[in-house]
Length: 324
Image 1 (cartoon, rainbow, N blue to C red):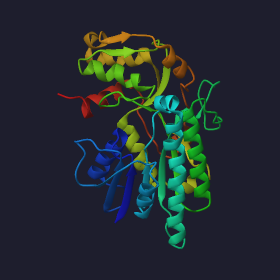
Image 2 (cartoon, helix red, strand yellow):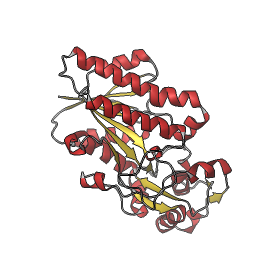
Image 3 (tube, helix red, strand yellow):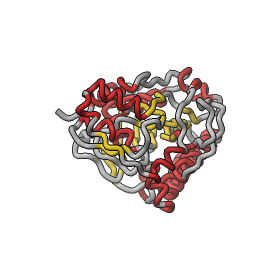
């Protein structure tokens, strides 16, 4: 029996991961006992896994989660980029301090077990750990220099997990996810939410606001790929990381104009006409500082895979999440 804890299990990526685990299991693990933790859970959430509701900033909840002694811990919970920037205290409390307290609680369980409890911890980081100026493609040797609070919080969490793993308290890995697109459901407070909105809303017959020029280029992967990354990371031999436990993951670099052309091919001009340009200086300023393209050679060599065209990303949304 392998105990799996998904922190942030009520969110979109957590639910995609849960669906894959319930349907396919985990390679090399016969039976999974899954526990979800989040502030709340969608009504569509399967009833099979145990659920714990609470806030990750609550020390009692962190102690409760660590006390489960899960073999595999996915840490997906976070305050998103836009909210981290506008609510400075909340961002640092949720994205960085909660990570510190979680790692400390897991270390306490490690010590109490006489050193036999060493969980695999998979942390979802972000390409926001990088900052301009950028090369044409960001390789695995490019330095981390975040230019947002969110990016700084993710970068610090990566370093903490690496050090706790170096000391043998856990076996951790940080996955720098591309922007996940097309996200189902409603838009969130992430500054990047429009990347999904300009595809999702028109496919659902609704207008979508485009706050940036269509020349903006960004790095994407689908929710399906995100779940695949997380499952692959669970069984990867971390000795292959050679002590560098943060990975920039595969994705697809494309412009907003290329996104729109993929939408046109999938749903026609009528869908494209629902996209309404509405420049937003604040969002344009944030987006201008984001990375645009990567050469994720290490992650690719380690077996991580993503889409190779935005048409695939659109079709994944249509197949998995489009209503009707």
